[in-house]
Image (cartoon, rainbow, N blue to C red; front, side, top):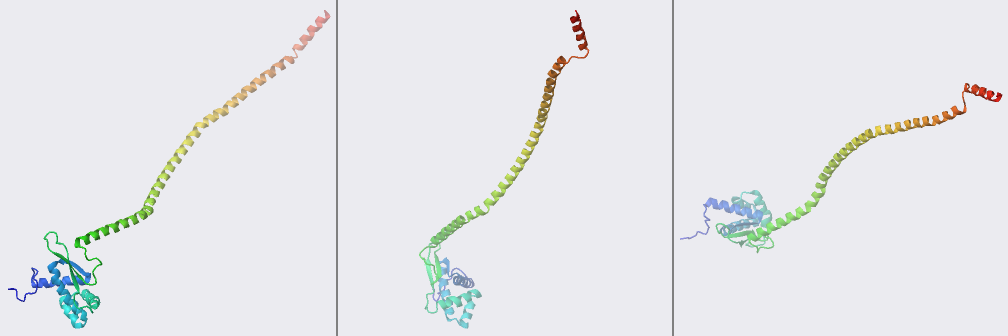
Length: 245
């Protein structure tokens, strides 16, 4: 017979059950909502609402009563400074249970245990829908961030690297071109030098030949017009003999 057995065992020992409920209540006070199985949510609901009732009083005795259950001082501070004063004018009903789909694997009924007044705007979505919406929203934010960051990186990092590579390539090509041009100039100068010397020698030889040709005709008429002295007396003698005859 189940007389005066109002506590749910949850398949745990007394110490384990108390520690589990205290941890669930602490998580509820910090995060304002938790996801757990339906039997645990029902057991933690009454446990957390009793602690909130102590926090509504706010005196030293109430604080010591709560410290017997929860020993985490940040949780006590949040409970007595924020949650207790918020529900000071509310008589009970500080928490809410929202049923979810069964858990995949063991088909356990799931539920959300949350504080009234701290719940999100839309509480009609199931756990899977909420997870899906969070995942989609996270992907959308990542895409937007990537789209915003890509042009900046392309403008800041990529052109610098390309410019440095291009400058290095241009410098190497210029150095190669300069060396090639210097070599070509030297080779051309070496090839043109003998040609110029030959060209310079040819006009000199031609000039000498022209001088020789010009001097020859000048000497011939001089030889004809001006006979030598030896020949002149011979002619005179022959002329005289002809005249005497």
